[in-house]
Length: 285
Image (cartoon, rainbow, N blue to C red; front, side, top):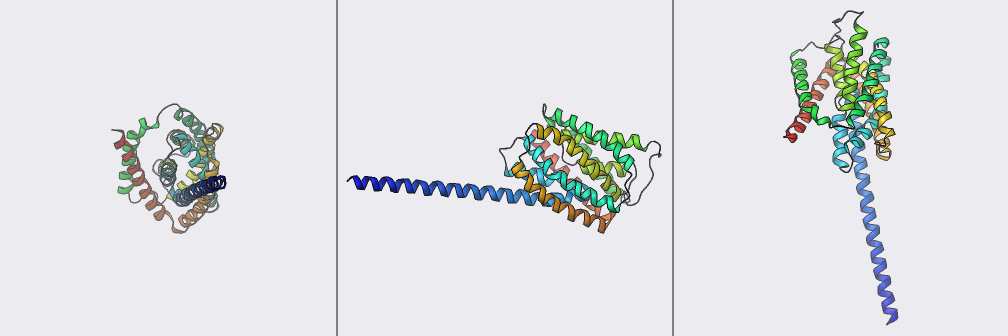
């Protein structure tokens, strides 16, 4: 009798142990699948972002979908940490092949860094959604202007006097830096558009400048995000490796195919941003 009870108890313990192990294995498999999917998203994001910006359109939504338990700032922090090295690799590839006006880049980057940190700080205290309807209008205007102006960014046009160029660059950097820290998605694309439409640079040169400035902006806001513990490193590091690979391939493709290719990708990204912010605005009402 006693032996029978002992056997049944052992059987229940073994059964419970097997069930627990099975649940752990399912949990680990699901976790690995999520990481695999988000890393693939980072690869695609790095490829797109290296050409004309907008990688956040792929990477950030993937984090929101696969890790719904993350706060908005955790997604922003993890996304930014995963992408900044890929942006650096793309910037390096461009700088080797495209003449970069380093003085202008430095001045713009300083304004971007200061305002990006400020934007991230303010974003932690209020909802960025208040700006989304305005951003949607601005993106739509950019899309119409870029699509209708077929020659935009195909060759360099001097729109600003050389003596005023640094001031325009500083202003562009400050505006885009604040946007980067406060909202985030599309900063690289907006930087490219600013340097093409306002300063008259060709798409490849504007993309090279945007990458370098974007790295500074990302690092500046990352100081705040890492300091406050908003970066999930166990997810961000594998994503960063995939993002770097995508950035390397994308920048090589852009340099090989030229301004027309970059312009086409730019329009695709802008329309993607319009869809993204349009969806967000509709959900608000």
